[in-house]
Length: 149
Image (cartoon, rainbow, N blue to C red; front, top):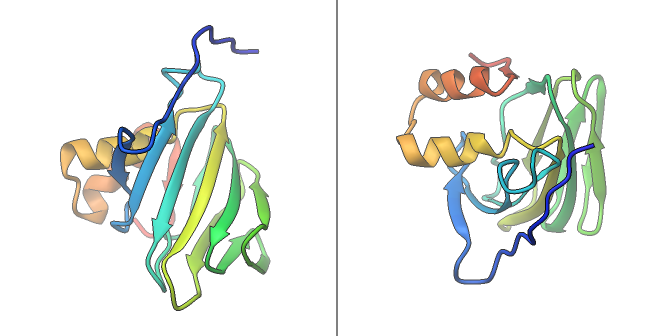
């Protein structure tokens, strides 16, 4: 089990802002580097009709809590809608995707364990990766298989 010894604090107005492969804003709250690999944590703000392409994580379990909007999740052969208050846990090694199907911007809080894939958002922002091919290079380094590339 990973241990970390210092509080990780994300204060309003001082958060780290990044972006998803599809351009949505992400607020990073904790990284694997800060938690000794235990977890990563962020919020994603998703415009209507947007979401990631089908992809598979080879390292981490993802947990999402829908805060605002309604999201349609696909996990393996299953599809379901998630209104506010819904918590969805997605296993590693199973293809999944999600999309904001409401008419308003959506918001989800996410935690991954072990941490690490939150680097995707940070690295997209830092490098300006603006094509599926550039994003795919980052995803591959993080053990994320994107079915669209």
